[in-house]
Image (tube, rainbow, N blue to C red; front, top):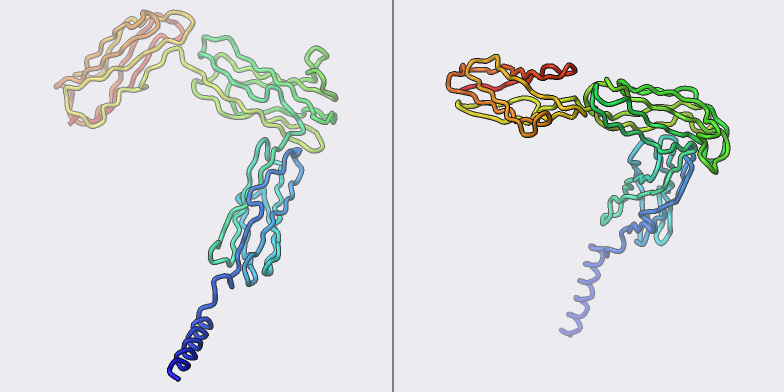
Length: 335
C-alpha cells in the first residue's frame, strides 16, 4: 500500500508542476528565412518591392507589432499574425528616386517572441541612373593667383537612349563657372544612342582659398530623371601657407618658443625678405630650409612679454607682388 500511495502522489505532483509551468515551445518563435536579401539592379526612379519571409516555429501565434524602416525612402507592410508552423511576410518597398549606386536599407521588426523580440531585415540593391555622367565627378587642385584656370569636362547621356535636354546647371562653388551644350560629333561618347550633352566646369585662378566640397546640380527634362548631381571636390591653395596657421601658446609661462613651417606652393620662387613682431618681448627669426620655397619661422616669447591675454601678430615681407606680406597671429595667455 505504501508503495502504491507514493506512486499516485508522484503522478499528482508531476501533473501539478506541468499545469503551472508550460513548456517553452508553447511560445511563438520567429525565424526570418531571409534576413538579408540582394535584389540586384534597378533603374533610378523605380520602386523596389520585396517580401521577406518569417516562419513561426513556435506553438502559439506570432504577433508582429511593428516594422520600422531606417529612412523615409522605405516603407514596410507586414502580416500582423502568423500561426504556429505558418510563414508570413514583411513587404519592404524602397523608392529609388533619390538613390544611386549600391544601397542597403534596413527594417527593424518587433514581435512577441520572448527570445527574439526584435530583429532587422536588410534589403540590398544596385541603383543605376537613367542619365549617366562621364567621368561623373570633378576634382580641382590649384594655387590661388598662380595656376591657370582649371577645367573638367563632363558628358551626359541617357542609358536607354531617351532624348533629353539640359535646362540648367548650377553650383554653390565660388569661382566655378559651368556652361553646357549639346555634344558635337567629335565630343560624343561612342556606342551610346540619343542626345549627349557636354558640361564644361572651369575653376578660376582667383577662386577663394580653401577646400572644395559641393555639387553641380543639373536640371533636365528627362521624363524620369529631372536632376543629376555631379560632385565637386579639391582644394585651392594659397601661394604661401603657414603650418600651423597661427602661433597659439595657450596658457603659458615664459620663456617659451614655437616653430612654424612656411611653404611656397607657387611655380615661382618667393623669397621672404624680413620679419617683425608688433609685440614687445616676442623675438622672431626666419631660417631658410630651401631658399624661396620653405622656411622655419622661430618664435620666442621672452620674460618681458606682458602678463595676461596675448593677441599679437608677426608680419613677414616677401619679394612677390602677388603676396607682398604674410601675417601670422600670435595668441595665448601669459601667466
